[in-house]
Image 1: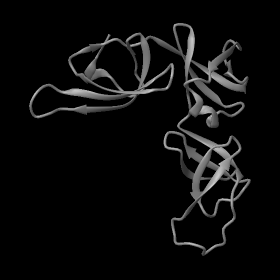
Image 2: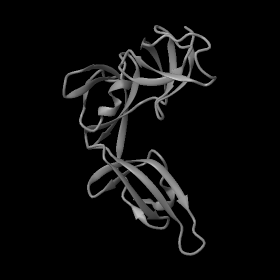
Image 3: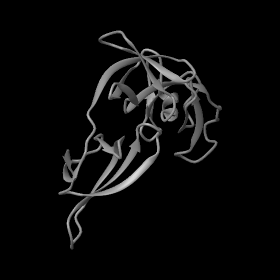
Image 4: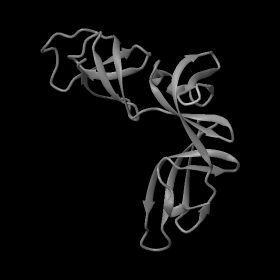
Length: 187
């Protein structure tokens, strides 16, 4: 059990027998009444989102999960296959509920696999990742005002808006939480 006031982003709670990952937490202390935490949570089984308010003094059941550092191997159609870096076992993470993460999976990159009751239920993507630009339109200098952007497609199929000077074949750093361009990477 965990107190409502101790809930933080990244905590896994058990609600009606289903694990939910807290993706946003806002602490609210109204002038009248007791303080509470407004939590936005993602269902780790089907990807649905739930928003719930929890009083800071109330107890909520937290899920006991373990994490494994794994490398992405391949997509078998129904699952994403990873290799545990310690045991070299293969771990199959169901695509259902994790479809949005497909564009962030790259060979030989280390990811954190969240396991609940022996079942892999989530893939934690690094906050920033490097991608190669696979498709990009060329723009001529002076075409538009400063700060203009264009859509590009990375080698994994991810679409990102980048400044006009980014060209096909270059590498860029992307914030995976917001899907925003961070900077060009020289390698």
